Length: 271
Ligand SMILES: C[S@@+](CC[C@H](N)C(=O)[O-])C[C@H]1O[C@@H](n2cnc3c(N)ncnc32)[C@H](O)[C@@H]1O
Image (tube, rainbow, N blue to C red; front, side, top):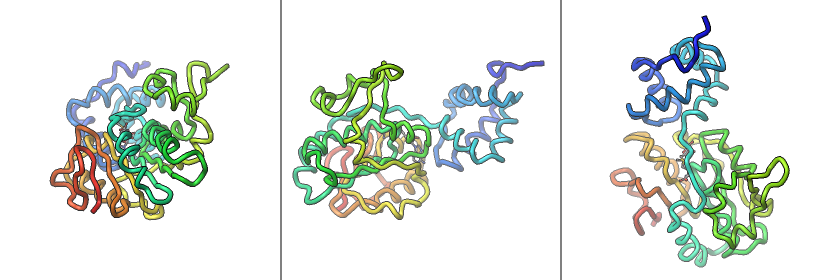
């Protein structure tokens, strides 16, 4: 009998197994209300393998590293936008860049599809100019798929309205032919960006050097106590003295890290 994956239900026990596994490999703390989301996101993997239960998929997952990356790519929430929380880009433009001595290094530490990194690049280009070597932006994320999208820099036109006209004109081109309905970021802007997959819970960023500005926005909300602490510790250890850290508006570093001090809401500085 052919069982449709839409008819297969994720039991509470199976959800618990996935929850523990997600936590083990990414540190992400899945809340109970995410059960439906996990069920619907994994349904396509059940369909793909024609598994008859989530338990079967779970067992398979334990044996296949490639599927584990696929699993992370499916499970993570990658919502983002260009110039999201615009006060950070305003602060970068007016308070950080004008005072910068020498090239600036920026890290978009959970970059998703790169909107945050390209927004920063547009601001850097405006203040520092287009010549090479004035700024470098490193983009990392645990989700390999979104890092690939960031690297390509091709986005649906629905994002266009988020980008100020002056930047659009200078850095974005409308897609034609098979790219119609999309726009692409200029190679000139892209040449200042580096991309790699990275789990912020693992302190594997020793070769990345230090940064003047780090964006760690809208990802800490998915973590609890020790993991949240560990991620902030890992990230802050890469921040230069005097460097700035941006977090999301619904996040807090209260009781998490005291090696940075708050300058403004969601903006911190390493003394
Ligand atoms: C909601 S998006 C935020 C994107 C962007 N920073 C912003 O504010 O628009 C959260 C991102 O965190 C990434 N993420 C989740 N856990 C991670 C981990 N352990 N290490 C690195 N990135 C992680 C997800 O893949 C996702 O792309």
